[in-house]
Length: 614
Image 1 (tube, helix red, strand yellow):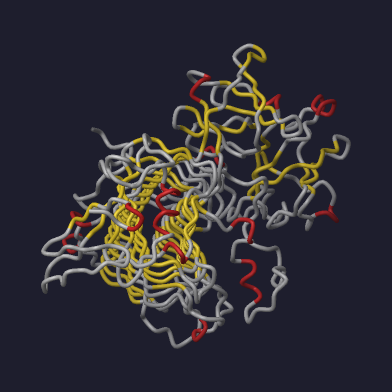
Image 2: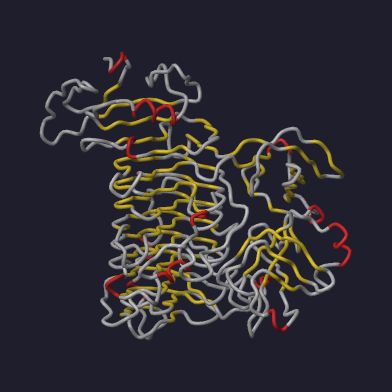
């Protein structure tokens, strides 16, 4: 059978024969499955392919473009992406023109099983030559801000060297160099013994600082290029303001320096000379296994406006690996109103990401009815999956996210009081492992902001610098303008959280339902939080770790059957504005009511559990 312009189309249907694209469909008997039309993509495909199994298309982009040109959709379309590696040089963009139509879905699926079709946002670096000893260097044709060897993230050459490859410590501490400079955010004073004077002769113009600004407030990290160093007065000049000043009454800020050639002193470290477009690397294995990112976002789903949404699309079983970070990072604007736009709650400028940082390996905005299922996302430069602003009924399920630069899954609605534009999402049966690798500050396995009516269930989050799961608005927001309502969390396991930050909870809320009356419309049940203990080498100056922390008016929650392991502060910290039953920080906790066998991902989870013995 042929489709429009002679294109062969393979139909999978029960009791139906369909003529696609302007043809007639035989009525489908009641109760029969929808007819499904199959197309194919393969690494052996070509520009002249027709999408059949015999003559497949060569890329998802080609499939998208061919389907976009068709006028009417008479069946659910499945694009079968055959096993293999597909290098992504440019973000694969889907708009409202690529939506499923007339009640039908378009699905891009890994045809040979979960994780077999791999979209790689990186390319090998070649042309290496010996620089000295075990260090190689090469010229590059693009700038990037993270690097990988043999499927593992390399470390930007840093000082002091990290204690282990999956932790962030140790740190240096800033000091108060001059009393009148206590509030500055672009000059960081250092101890003379921490930064040797001999560095003055060749202080590297490519150097950067990673700092938990705020003194003892270990809440956010800034990654900022340094404009220079004054070795007489012992301070660094940052090219951009940090989130907070570098001193408070209890401590200086923890920091380390990176991206200087003199710091490249062990395997697995690299240095990027941006001015000369040269990369230096000391490989752990073969120098031929080094790849560098080509994109920050691999798949973008973006309608042109909230009234013109991309919708009825699904991505199933695909693996996405490697994406890039940014040249500098700070969480939010410094002060309310800094966005330059008038808002009902301008203070939300301090909570929301700046436009330059609104991206993920998969970025979704202005969407409806999108399914992201059975995915494997790994080695992202920044967010894994980012649902930004107007999105409705997005499903993220049965997916493995590991080695993520910032948050695993982030859902960010709009400004409070300006329209409830994000919600009714389903996030279920996902394993999220190692988050916050490049942005440990405020890192979370799942972060929900200004969004409601969501279901989060059967989740494992393991190894996070800060949170496991967080739900946030602002304490200034009135109840009628708070959209973080009717969220349901169940069958959750949070492990190895709070590794590098303080004043936190593995399950965390901020400014939710902070004024009376407190409607009990967010629920948490059947949650296990294992020990929440800092990495001792991090020298944490902040207050202690908690299992559940309801911060700045975190009210309107019911908790049922919650178990928390060891913490350095309270297992549960909250105002008296939530209902708690059967929690192990209260008398009368009954472990028999815990449904341990249902907590975390289910037996149907499609991927091996990271770190589990095989």
